[in-house]
Image 1: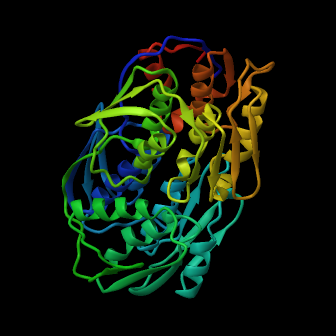
Image 2: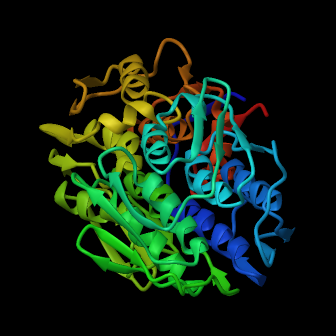
Amino acid sequence: MRANVFPSEIGGAVTAPPSKSMAHRAILCAALAPGRSRVDNLAFSQDVRATLDAVRALGARVETGADFAVIDGPARIEAAGGVGVDCAESGSTLRFLIPIFAQTGADVRFTGRGRLLARPQTVYEELFAEKGVAFAHTPDEVRARGPLPAGAYEVDGGVSSQFITGLLLALPLCGAPCAVTVRPPFESRSYVALTLRAMADFGVHVAEEGNTYRITGNEKYKPANYRVEGDYSQAAFFAVLGALTGGVTVRGLREDSLQGDRVILDILAKCGARFAREGDAVRFEKSRLRGAEIDIADCPDLGPILMVLGLFCEGGTVLKNAARLRVKESDRIAAMEAEIRKMGGGITSDENTVTVRASRLRAPDAPLDSHNDHRVVMAMAVAALGAGVPVAIENAGAVAKSYPDFFDVLRSVGGKVETDG
């Protein structure tokens, strides 16, 4: 799909889509709880659909409605030997599910598309080998066969919090005491906090002692009715758009959220953006912005839109601890550099740092490329609207991975967008 974005008068209110991070966690907790749960305020992105399909392979029954899922968790999770689990392009689905499926004792094969199977799994590879659990990772699949034993686990915290979440979700199934200790640096810790909140909502309480998480062995998942909160990560695109153009209100943002990407409001304030909160709604005004140094170790998903923000900030904007952006759906640093330069933007990087200069963007001579990355598409659409220049974005259908309605929502606040698919 090609999206053509034209200069537009922006103004209006949007509702933040449901948090994909919390949706994954709630679906998995519901599937691990024997009995019926209901998860409301779901958006059926490709990633969320992958997780719903996967829990069916664990024996859960799933019925879906317009924006909800009713999940009947089995008395005991099971998987047929040699079962294949298609994780699409969802890193969360794959890394959360590997230890959960391992607990079935079956030989399970995980597949995916795009760059998913190129993303590192060394944390599990080393940990499973230490525990005597079969694990193999090739360019075509990941295979695992457990179960994982109860006891103590130590995990590198500098790769991805997804590995920590996967273990925390799975280890209560051991029925005996377990502990997970995270070796520093502990990046994206806020995502683990989201995991603990979801687990607690489904009856499993984990004791946190510094960098160690303890499960007593008596904790069991219990059915629950759960409502997914709004997603700060996706709201960030409209928050930045509002700071650039004014007149944008984003609703559905829980003030006491534990989402790490909630920091987008602090970052915008640091850069001089003017906005006001009233309840769960935040209204953004057109602002004169200044550059800043921003550590994205705990909010890597904000990387692409923060690079766009930097193009409109006086002085230089520096994103630190950005290396993990290179192993996402695309190499997000290289992808954003390529597309920003097509529009005349100033951006440079090394392995771990991105520097962006205030730039007068122009209409590119050729279409922009999505790099098959939803966040690149959305970030570049905001860049074009902020600069008031037309762009075409090839393969813009990548937004379906996390935010299928993105262009419709953009149109609802005045964005002139034409799509051919």
